[in-house]
Length: 97
Image (cartoon, rainbow, N blue to C red; front, side, top):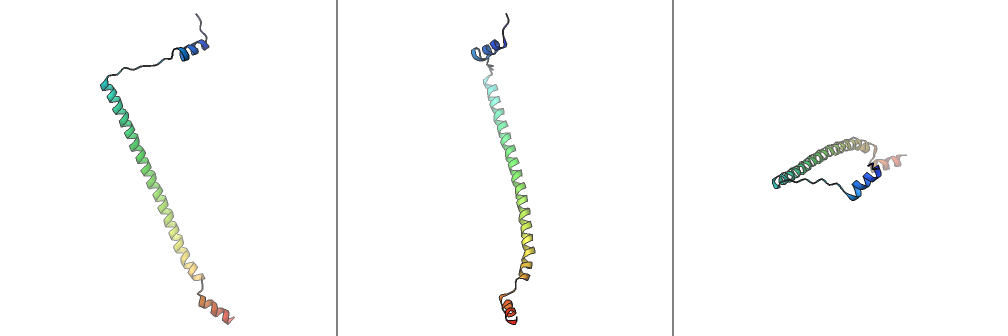
């Protein structure tokens, strides 16, 4: 007898759901649980390592930028002092003129 695609989908999905059942011993179940926990622990350790590497990388970038800004401030500080005249000098110039 010929069954349509619609009939086979309907029969498979709604009326007779197929489930795979595995039967394992208690020792196998414990081993599976242990492996899952070890994988989770390994994932956490790898995640921690990546985060620490990213953190150290970011600190290096911030330190470099901080150093650049300090150097720029040092370079600008003498120039600002030279251009500024003391208040007494400006009064003297105003009186002379």
